Each structure stands twice: as C-alpha cells, then as structure tokens.
Image 1 (tube, rainbow, N blue to C red):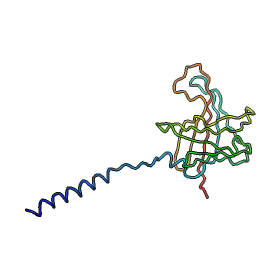
Image 2 (tube, rainbow, N blue to C red):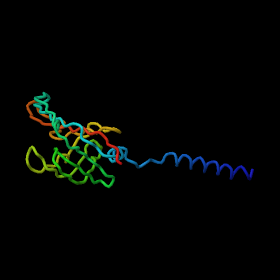
Image 3 (cartoon, helix red, strand yellow):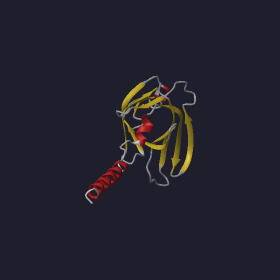
Image 4 (tube, one colour):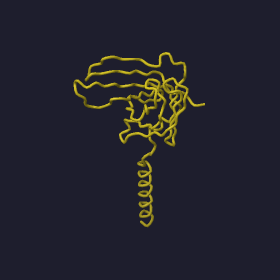
Length: 165
C-alpha cells in the first residue's frame, strides 16, 4: 500500500509532463521563414488597368531588361533591392507584414524610370502567392470595394527564389 501511493503520483507527474511538453506552441513564423530564405529574382511585371471590374488593358513590363533584379529579405527585418526598374541601383530599407500576414510593407525608396523620380514601389504590397519557390506581389489600387466606374491600376510582380550561395 505504501508503494502504490508514490507510484500513483509518479505516473501522474509523468503523464502531466508529457501532455504539457507536447502542447507547447512553436513561435516560428512560417511566412517570415519563407520570405527570408534565399533571394527573390524578378521574373515578370504585369500592369493591369481596370474600370470597375472590367479590364481595360494589360501591359507586360521588363521584357527587354537584361539586368537581374533581386529582392532580398533579411531576418532582422531589413531588405534590399538591386536594379529596380532595370536601373543600376541598390536600395535598402525595412520590411514588415500586416497582422493577418496578407500584406507586405517595405519602405525602400527606388529610382523609377517611368516617373523619373523616386518611389516606394512596395510600400503596401498584397501577397497573392508565397511558396517555397515563388512570390507574387500586387501593388497599386488594392481596394477591396470599388465603384463600377472607378479607374484602377494594379501592378503585379512575380519573383522566383534564387538559392543563396
């Protein structure tokens, strides 16, 4: 009888320990891990013009650019972009994700050929697709609700992962 009482408490302690350890949550952020592993090389830029839900025109940009454009995200929340808009430049900034992790915010200031001035192209970018090998961001008029006559322009950037060496 004396042995059963301590044995019962020992079994309960082991059971509680196993349950507690198996329920611990991993604090690793999967989206952040995907973004920060490797560099992202620009594969395509498509600009779409809308009126309401109707597509007016679609333009594919960067088709003649011979410079490699790289978007790099670091774990310390800094980022860099080289050769934005096919111009020889390297810019740095900071990045963050929205609370729901659907939007990327990057404060990099890039030189832009279309406007011949500086811009923040990824100040607010909607994450359309993020996988192990691809990242698709949309910028521009990203309103969820719009009127049937509202003119909108959305730029979609497609990136592929390049392994870091």
